[in-house]
Length: 154
Image (cartoon, rainbow, N blue to C red):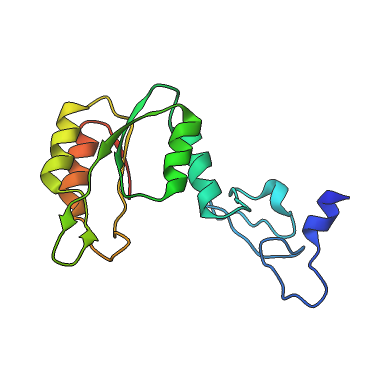
């Protein structure tokens, strides 16, 4: 019964192209997936939103005890995901703009230093732009991380 319920739309609600029978989808290879429902779709969907997705990503990305470089000013779901994975976060402290009472990005010098000191980190997680709209200069950070084989999530 559950499988059938997922393929139907509630009365009075507009057509949902992801679930509707006869929906026109193409996967990355260009193959047509008309009316095959979610079971055969080449994509994964999280029904609980971005916070749940973050938790799933970190449990997939990190094995217990593995290191990651983590912006301390990221969303709490990222911290939850790291805890659930058993990963070992190396926290990167944000800059503080005392004049405007804002937390800014982690200074580039701090990030590059952390990449040099922890080349065995599995990933670096940065919040860009910050909650107050401040951005990183990502190109040199991504380049330095990739040179050490560190994945970057921004």
